[in-house]
Length: 489
Image (tube, rainbow, N blue to C red; front, side):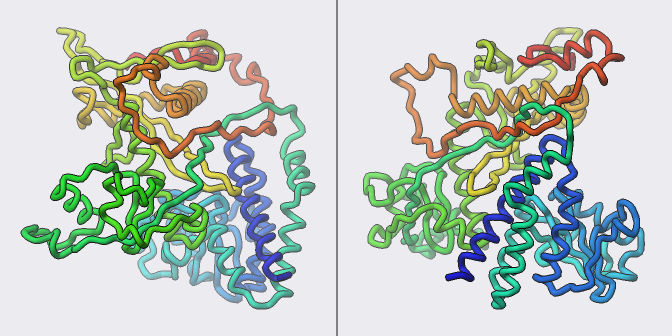
């Protein structure tokens, strides 16, 4: 029992660490990233057995590309909070450029936030050229991988030592001291782009009950996955059910009640096999289950977004505000900024100067990532622009130039405003008028949107110290709290 308590405490402390790093980085305080390098050395020494691991930045300030090294075991680590594919490629290029592979034949990248669901293995091989050992599957790690390795340790003394190391660094008292040491300035509240969400506490599971060969008779495609088979069956039988479910290892997982035989989704499972579990019983099993559960959340989100006039564009992986009336392409929504009710265009037309005919449309869009931090679920919102020629279809000639220009001219206040608007819209949906229409068919929404994660430990910067030289129109844009200023694009 002592060993189980120790492991649970280790998991709790590592999860807290991830949450704190994400919070500090969101407010541009990166001191904790540097501290992380020293914190992880004794933990890695215990977990991996690399007893000669040292902080290379003590030998050379900002050792380009790597942070920790063990020349005896010829292993190097990059410690970073940035998890994207571009960061991985940059690290690999630095490793090759600086000939680090002559001293280290293996490289690990440890993500102190959370690694991505997938990486481009082919691109990495092109950079590495067989000079050292590295694969996205085995060498890109985060706290979940570290927890699995720790959980596999059988020596209780080692586990207890790891727990003590983490207690020394991530206790409430220690985290408070970190926050105080990063800045002695007064503080202000900073809003992140992480919107907390809730979902039902019951997850229904049923064994898939379909005759695959019978369904695919006459279909010439060679490779058909289970989800496609289900859609073929749905069309053949004229069934009606939405896409907010997943098939995983020949089972259907959904928040819909699979015992309800009036729901057509129950017709593709063996009703006698249906069980109800808590969502965490599924997504906490392993990394594959976590990815599958995130897919379920995404399908649920897409269905809800579609009802609110937001379509998912699969090729670009973005959600786009689209016209709701085929005769009216532009679109305006009302919302409350926190100070007053206002309106904003989510689809705007740009006219040709000569004949005033539509040139292109600028659609507000956003991408999302589901994040699980410190036992809470969030949706990370990243505002985008999507350029269309008819309000729906991508304008390939203008999209890249116009969207890039808009991102360049936007100020932080505009980006924050986009995030606040999107969060407000997801939380409350359409304008209040829609809520009282009796003829509006509303879907069953499984995701509830709560509030944005905020931190009150950001240094309070005096704006006059860095805005004194700005022109009047620039100052006006920076202080555009309600995001009402328009761009000339």
